[in-house]
Image (tube, rainbow, N blue to C red):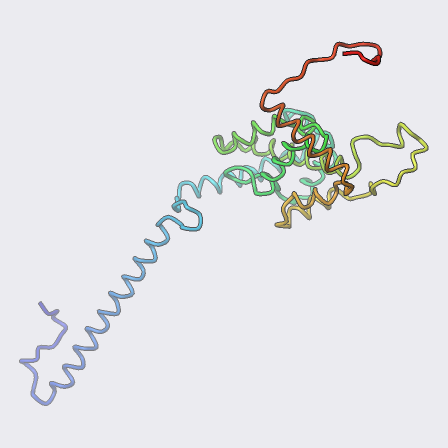
Amino acid sequence: MEPDYLPSLTDAPRGSLVSLWRQRLRLRSWRLASYIVLGLLIGALAWVLSPDEAVGEPLNLREHVATVKLELSLQQKLKSLMAAPEALADFLPEPLWVPALTSAHYRADRGLVWVRPGGLTAHGRQLLTSLQDAGEAGLLPRDYHLPLLDTLAKKLTLDPDPQQYLRTEFLLTDAFFLYSRHLRTGKLDSTAWMPYWDVPGTDTTLAYGNLLVRVQNSSQPLDSLFAQWLPRHPEYWQLRRAMRTHLAWQKAGVRWPKVPPVDKLEPGQR
């Protein structure tokens, strides 16, 4: 049924038939264009609400709101902690090795590096993996807040607690500073136990705080950063491969008989 606003061809004079046809065509064209625009809008809305092929997850308004709330809670909690840095020791489950460096980064309001709503950032995952493999470099993973960091990282995806996120963030930053220092200059100060130590060493004046800012603003994998501090001579890499093999045996349950404690070893002693 035609709408009332369309003129009837039977009621029109013969001379005006052409103009009436043109008017009807214009009205129908406008209506068709409206349908097309409406269809495009519905299609766009359906695309937005459909699963994102790049991410693999649907856009969930409730999840988005929860993410925003968590981000705001993290910012507020971080500011309150930095307003009273002395409370940081009570807030963390383990003491920090380099508390001054760690707290200085966050007092400068540079934001979080290792965690984000939903878990660890890419750099956070890379750092945790490097700390887990620290044994290959002859270092002890337990010096870098492991296995506590493993436990905290697993809980992040299950419990959106801002305090757990910030504990993980602070401990990872502390571990990053200490691990970086150990890779560059070693765990011991050579001159402290050998005053006449004259072997050239690595420059110890690196500004580690600036280093973290550089990491934060870069997409460069942490592996490439740590690799540039490792020794170059082949003997080191032979020892590292042997340590990797030894750790794999240890993880597989291989055990060696223990040597009983003695004052000194004699030739032929077993």
